[in-house]
Length: 242
Image 1: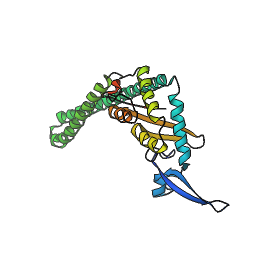
Image 2 (image 1 turned 135 degrees about the horizontal axis):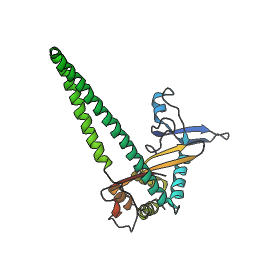
Image 3 (image 1 turned 90 degrees about the vertical axis):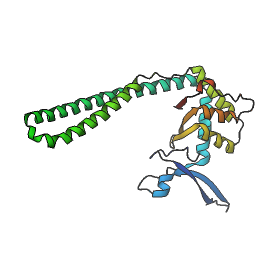
Image 4 (image 1 turned 180 degrees about the vertical axis):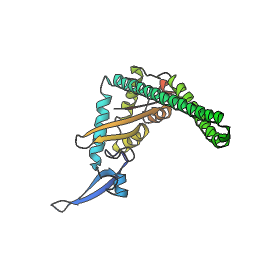
C-alpha cells in the first residue's frame, strides 16, 4: 500500500515502517505501520504520524473492494458519480469563461482610456504606448484562454453505460480473487491511484483509474481472459471513487 495510502491530514503519501515490542513473556513482536511520510521526514511542524497498522489498512481496502464488487447497484452508482463530476466541471468552466470575459472587457476599457488620454494630450504618447502594448498582450492571452474554455465547454460527456462499468468491475473481481497478499499489492498498483481513510471510523475510499493499458495488465493476471481488453475502454480513461 506504500504510495497508495494517503495521510488523512495533509493528503501526502503514507510509508511503511516496523516497530518491535517486547511482550510480557519476553517474546519480541514486530508490527508494520503506515505513517505520514511528511511527518517522518520533517516532523510535527508539517503534519502528524496518523499511523495505522498495515494489516488493518490492507484488510480495510480488501473488504471495501469485496463490498463494492458484490454490490449489484455499483455500476449505476459509478455512472451517476461520473455524470455529477462532469456537470460540476462544466459549471466550473462556465464560471471561468465569465471571469475571463470580464477580464477582457476591463482590459479593453483600460486601453480605450489610455488612447483617449493620448488623443487629448499627444505629448504623453511615448509614455503611455508601452502600457497600451502590455495591455494588448494581456488581452490576446485572455482571448486565447477564453477560446480554449469555449472549446472545452462544447465537449460532450463521454458517458458510460451501467453495463460497461459492470463489465469492468467483473474483470476486477475476477482478477483479485484467489491471489495471495503479495500479488494483490502488485495488482492494486495497476488500477488504484490512491486510498484515503478515516482512522477513527475505520472507513476507506478507493480512488480507481482505468485505461486500455491498465485493462491489458489486469488481463495478464486472469487466466482464460481474452487479451483484447474491454472494448469500450480503447483510447479513453475513466476514474472514480468508491
